[in-house]
Length: 176
Ligand SMILES: [Mg+2]
Image (tube, rainbow, N blue to C red; front, top):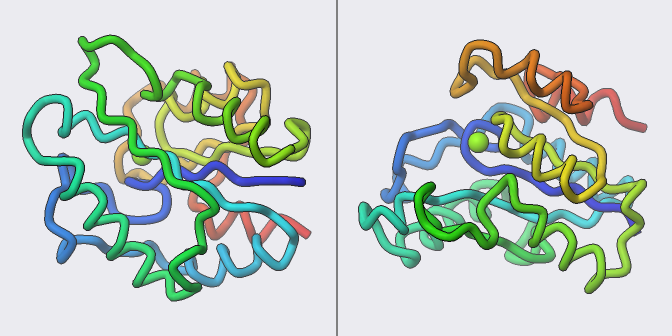
């Protein structure tokens, strides 16, 4: 079984720092069609998002879930479009469990869903996404949308073995 591990903010939707309002969820162009194509190609889809705003006390887990629910509604491929969702709530200075670059969620899903690591890809717009994929031993794609990336991050992502695309839609357009 093959799978995509998808970052949320800056990858599938507009990055709004410390987002807690579902009304501000804005899907990037082509994301819904690209997710449909991924499903048609046989990819199981996982949503994997760092939400340190929870650990920092800026908003609650329920707020993050409400934003995910809005995202899933806008995608329009049904409530179960993602096989599983991981919201990593840790603040950067807290003990790290699921927070990317931890590979814990990916490794758990590989075991639970009998995924082939060689056929799994993490897609994200930060070096932490790329490194989570590297730490889990799966392929990685770095999205440089200009939305959130920091200077030098793309070079670091390439160094960590990532392919670079300007958007998730552009990555999926290259898949067949
Ligand atoms: Mg992101």
